[in-house]
Length: 110
Image 1 (cartoon, rainbow, N blue to C red):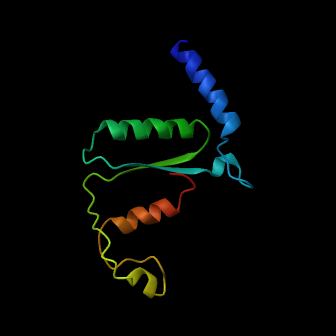
Image 2: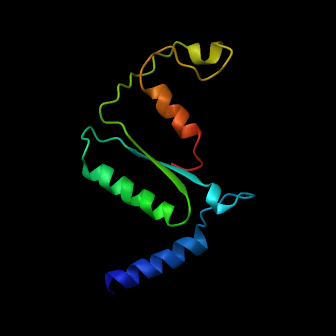
Image 3: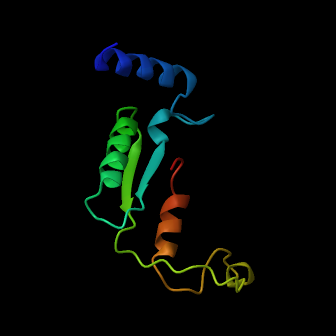
């Protein structure tokens, strides 16, 4: 089987078995976030994540790419601050994780 046949077969399988829409939502509302956790800015991981996002775009999904390269993300200190303040989920550690978490929560798929 050549590459074109494999692609056509996978496209048919994916669209039948895994439609890119949520119950009650039109497919054009799907928002996909691709995250590369590689420490390198121009890594194979980034290339592959961007290619996957292109596939989602072919199904009319809105896509966004985030690279964790150069981001400062501290480990959780288990202080429970995020549970104790009025707006749950706000962390007292000031790093780049909060921005990434907000971006994730705005998406329908990762």
